[in-house]
Every structure is written in structure tokens, then in C-alpha cells.
Length: 80
Picture 1 (cartoon, rainbow, N blue to C red):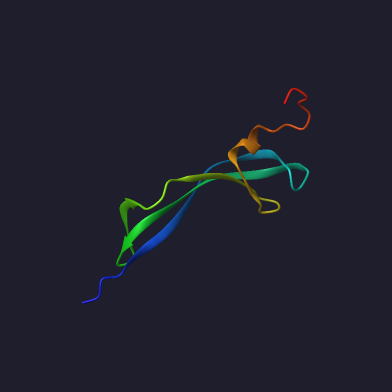
Picture 2: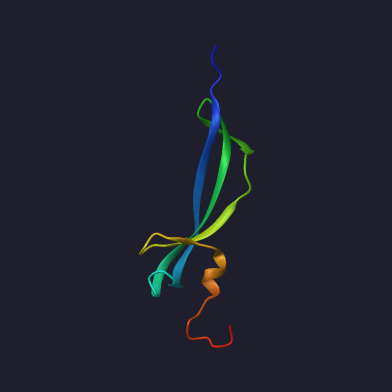
């Protein structure tokens, strides 16, 4: 009998909006995503995570990913 186990990543989109993309140098749409890996048994995801969740912001124009602190950047704000 074979026992097939492994790991599968799951990416969940938690929010969308507009932010200033440092690569595009302009206001672009973004997706706030959370990625986590799960243990699988016979290709079925179990309730056992194998990693901590990773939160990031993805620019929907250029496809680059950034730390969630990128959402706070405002090029017109001189106090930062």
C-alpha cells in the first residue's frame, strides 16, 4: 500500500483597492493576499498548516509583490 503525502500552497485574496506602486510609479489596483502551505494526505488538504501565513500586496498592473507597508505610502505626503 502506498501512502501519498505532501504539501500544497493556498493563496487567499483578502482585499483589493488602489495604492501607489513603487515599480509603476503611479496609482494602481492591488490585491492583498495571504499565502499558507498545508499538509496533504492522498492529495486532500488536512487541517495542519506547515508554515506561518505570509501576507503581501500584489500590484495587478505589473505583477510585483510588496510588503503590506506599501499600502501606507503616499507620494504626496511630506511627513513620512
